[in-house]
Every structure is written in C-alpha cells, then in structure tokens.
View 1 (tube, one colour):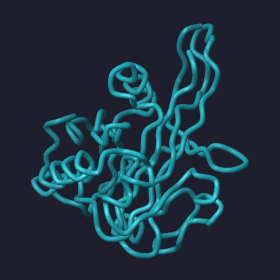
View 2 (cartoon, rainbow, N blue to C red):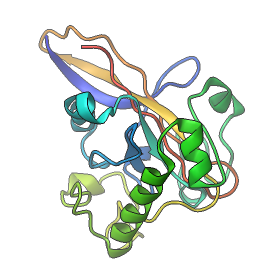
View 3 (tube, rainbow, N blue to C red):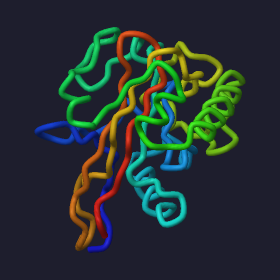
Length: 210
C-alpha cells in the first residue's frame, strides 16, 4: 500500500493524540517551518496530512505547528483539558508544546522567522474578522463547520488569534487505518495549547517517512 487514512496527531509523552476538533475550532492556525500557513486547517484530517506530504519538499510542513491563543483555550476543550485550565507541564517538558507571551518569543521557541509569523497572524486575523478564508478556503465546505463553534459568526471556523499567552505544541501525521498496502510507518503529531493568559499557540505537525 502507498497510502492510508492519515490524521494530524500530537506527540504527547506516552502516546500520540489524534488531533481532530482542536485544529478546526476558530482561532487556531497551522504553520510550516517558514512561519506561513499552508493548508485549510478545518479540512478532513486525511486531506490535511496529504497536503503536508505534498508541500513538504518545498514548504517544510513536517513537522508543523498549531497556533492557538488564550482566547481559544478559555473557550474550548483541548484533548481532555477543560477551558481555562493550563496544559500539563509534561507537555512542555517533552517539547510537544511551547508557550510564550509574544509572537516573537514564540517564533524563537519553535525556530521559525518572527517577521514571517507576525505577517501570517496579521493576515489570518484580517480574514477571520471578515469571516472569509480566500487563502485556503477555510469555511467554504460543510465539513469545515462540523467541529467548530456555531456562536462564532459569520464563519464558525474562523476567529482572530494572537492574544498575549501563546503555547505551541508539536503535531505529526499518524495513520488512522490502512488503505491498500501501506508501506509507510505511522508518524507522531501534536497540537498546541495555550497557558493561563492569551498567547498564540502553535502545534508542530510532522509526517511519517514514506
């Protein structure tokens, strides 16, 4: 087999966590090693990883980071962590997640260009405020709105990000089930969470070797 049902996963200590709703909720964005978005974060999980593979040779999307801020964390469950509660220190100690008070500090902690990250977040926020996603068509399909927040209007899967407290976590592709005869090994992945105050959080997404 040369393919599988992939899904972004969080490489948490002990066991990777399959990142489903966390990346589609409003206020989160996925970035590559250059600090730029590269995919519709709310797309079907297998499509997201296929894109990671497709662009990785040029855009270095494996691993990638999921960025969320404290506004996000104050509203939504992340894995089994209730809104407003901090993520486990084990996440940060393992390197699966990072946190910072500014985008520049966050960029340093995850080794992406600070200027590029700021530019990406500003552009993302300007589109989110208008409820449109022309770069990657986030929110165009019905699927995009399945794991989102219907109280967020006009686009339930788009909201600005970047309030003070930010926590990035690492994310990688993982196999959901084989499709055909798969010769790839499962990857690890992670999603980002934010700490007590609002910051932008970025999870790192990687893929398994082909």
